[in-house]
Length: 389
Image 1 (tube, one colour):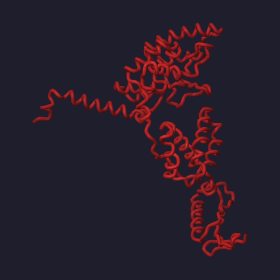
Image 2 (spheres, rainbow, N blue to C red; image 1 turned 30 degrees about the horizontal axis):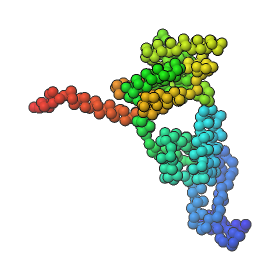
Image 3 (spheres, rainbow, N blue to C red; image 1 turned 90 degrees about the vertical axis):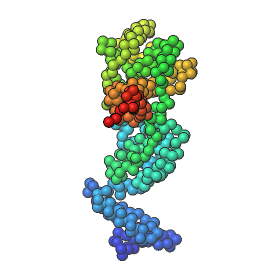
Image 4 (cartoon, rainbow, N blue to C red; image 1 turned 90 degrees about the horizontal axis):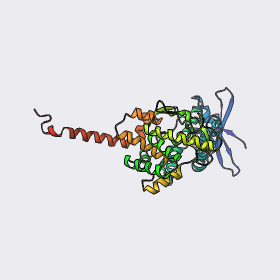
């Protein structure tokens, strides 16, 4: 293919294709950040003006030092997600790797993988990803997948492949909606725990009681060892989490915490510990500080799931359908309705005050309205003369 230079720029050329059609291309030479000589070229422009504009944009980018963006301007979203995952998988926890690999393989790459990374805009992202998922999946799941995508895009910005993250302000339905239908009232919680105590095993009851009265996460409860229960100071120390993938550090830095526990819960755990000693002994084992608190009736191994027990209780009592995490929501909602300090609640849950305000905003609004009503009612006896001259 014979190239002929354009008179408008020495790096702009035209040529004839196999059909004899006149097309345009550019070949721009530049030095990357390491000083290595590189060339960026692109062909098949149908007219000189468009080709020249594209060349000038590339020149401007290299002059600004944006050589990475020039080098990766053809990379697709799918290709970048693979690069990002491979670069970071050794740094992440095993559970994070599993979760993100599934999100990439099942959702992000099939729906967005074909788009050029630098060309994908917010409108296309919302139309082709967020809007198509809404109604098919839970809002919390969509929010989780969106967060993974934002993290990957932030990495592209840090790698100087993108100038900025266009997707940070994409609106996802608030966590409030998930919480609003996933908690019990104080009366319902009493019914729930009464049934658990009468109908479920001592392990299941002790586990559910502990979560309901402390607000700790399911994985945190499964990760408790007897050394974490301080019977003298009435506290529980959270320093690990456990699930089907194994034992690992807690979810966030805030998740490391020591919280006070109710006297009733403490007495239940004391009784339960005696049961654990007998059960372990029957299998030729001894209870130690490192023994996991919640164990099965058969085999005395650490429990792996409590969902069946939860569903049995809800079916027997006809209470609203909630998840195990709903007991954590219940704990927080009850405290908020009692007017407890948000900062104190956040520390108890292993969250930040900002997260509590975001997730439980509807509860706080209801409490605020109740406060306004109570204030007005307190002035009613003298309300007629209030403010009179």
